[in-house]
Amino acid sequence: MDSRDRTDDSLVPALTALAVGWFLTLGARFLLPAILPQVRTAFDIDDATAGLAVSVIWVGYGVMQFPAGALADRVDERTLLAVSLVLAGGSLAATAVAPVFAVFLVACALFGLGTGLFGPPRGIALSNLFAPTPGRAFGITLAAGSLGSAALPFVASLLAEGSTDGWRLGVGLAVPLFLATAVATWRYVPADTGSEGSDDADAPLARTLRRALADRQVVTAVAALTLMLFTFQALTAFLPTYLIRAKELSQGVAGALFALLFVAGAAFQLAGGDAVDRYGTRAVMAVVTAATVATLAALPWVGGLVPVAAVVALLAGQMAVQPVMNAYIIDALPPEGTGTAWGFLRTVFFLLGASGSTVVGVLSDRGLLDESFYLLAVVTAVAALLFLLLPAQDGGE
Image (cartoon, rainbow, N blue to C red; front, side, top):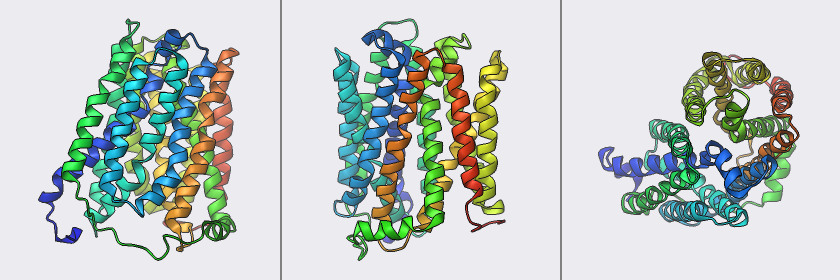
């Protein structure tokens, strides 16, 4: 049955399953930063090693982007989504009971790989099921992801505070939620979402990439986005730890501010889309990154709950970058083999960006956690300059 023959009401269970799946997938990806102090204690590891664990999750996620995109052209989305949720739930279970750090690290890698399988088929399913106007469905699903990024780490931080093994409970509670959502996805998401074969699906990757990388617009945008992912990955990996150590906040308060980062980020994402329509990508991205430079540099200098909370909320502005730049880069790619090229580029910039948490972990072990924010400010400043070099394309440009 073609997706356009379905009524909106009949698709509510499918949309709910997809939204809850993204709520869990994105939310669980930020569980580890919220419980990092307890993980360090449990396995007697330093900050660099803890940062490596966070990087491993993002590396696994990045590595899976290219094959997930290719699989989505060949396997129905329902199967890929359900498998992703089962793998994520199983790897979280292994994480929660890991007796030694080596097992914990392998479980983190499997979680990254499992969740990396979710994104491409999720987007395809939403596009097909809600064609020709999938915007609202995408908005609901992405908003659910932002809420998950706020809620799951916050709950985990509360459970971890004051308890040696509370972090294991916080991780373990997500396992049945993933498995139940996998069942709901299999039950309510149609096996046939309306996907049609594409003549470009098997276009040679090398030819497509040569055309893309010959375009200054693509190269500049990918370089800028990679730097912003590096900053975002580093910031989110160690922000709760930094707030506890440097700002002397309790883990519960630090978890609440971490949640605030994502709630504010959702608002910035919505505002960013409207601003781009009015002023253009180049201008909006340059302003957002310049503001991020200022807030990153200011965080080590501010004290007190209210000023720190204000800076954290402003740091969320950088979350407007990724969705805007995703659309910008996709639009700039050559039409032949766009999906395959996009999956490959996603793998590249996620892998490079994943190193952010390891770099900050190494600096932290050397007593340079404050200085790491200045480094991130410099990295973001370079991204701002790259955004200024983007060719005028749309909006007010």
